[in-house]
Length: 265
Image (tube, rainbow, N blue to C red; front, side, top):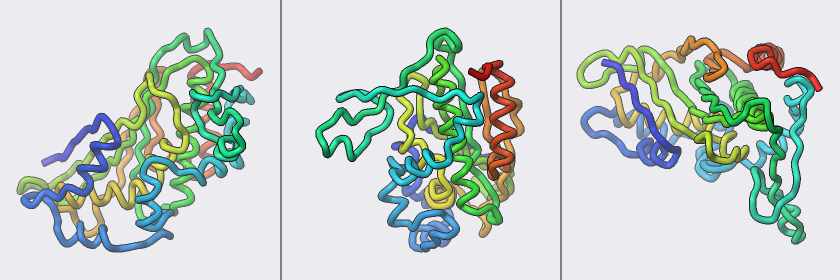
C-alpha cells in the first residue's frame, strides 16, 4: 500500500516527523535515527540540524560565492535596503543600526504575476554526497529568485519520493511520497529558510525520522526515485539525480531559460 502525504507548511511536517505511530512505525529504526550522528552523511550534526530548522545562515554566504545567477541569462537581481521589509536579513547592518532588510526590486511585465510551482525531489541514494545535495538546494533557491525577479510568483514544494520503502498497513509500501509546501506563491522568498528545507540534513535527518515514524520502513529506507515530471511554464521540477554537479546545474538552468524565453540583457 502506497504512503502519500502532503503538508501545507514546514511546522506541521516537523511536528509529525517526531510523532511516532505506535501501530505503523518502525520503533528501532526511529530510535536509531534519533540518536545517531553522522554529519559527513547528512551535512550537519543532529544538533546543528535542529538549530538550523528554520534558517541556514552559513548557506547564504556560500550561495553568494556560488553565484549561479551568472548562468541564468546573465540577469542579476537588483536590491535595495529597507528597515522593515525584505527577503534577507544582514546581521552586520542590523548591529550597526543601518537598514538591514535586503528587498528585491522586481521587474515588471515579464511574468505578470503568474504562479509557478517549483518541486524539489530531495531524495538521493546513499552514494550521493551531502555537498552535491546542497548544490541542488542552492540551485533551487537561485531559480526561484530568478523567476520572482522576472515578475513570476513561485510556490516551492519539497518532496521525498522513494520506492520499496518497507511496509504500510500490512502491505508492501511500493511508493512512499511526502510533499511539504515550504513557500506559498504570495510569501516572500527567504533564502536561509528555503536552503535548510531543501538540504541534505533535512532529508537524511528529518525526512528519515518521518519515514521511520509512519511506516515499517526497511533498513535502507527505500530507493530514491525520480518523479519523472516534464517541466512546463506552470511547473518546474528538480528531480532525483539532477543538479548535483555544476555542469548539470548549467544544463538545467539553460533549459529553464529557454522554456521561459528570457533573453540575455
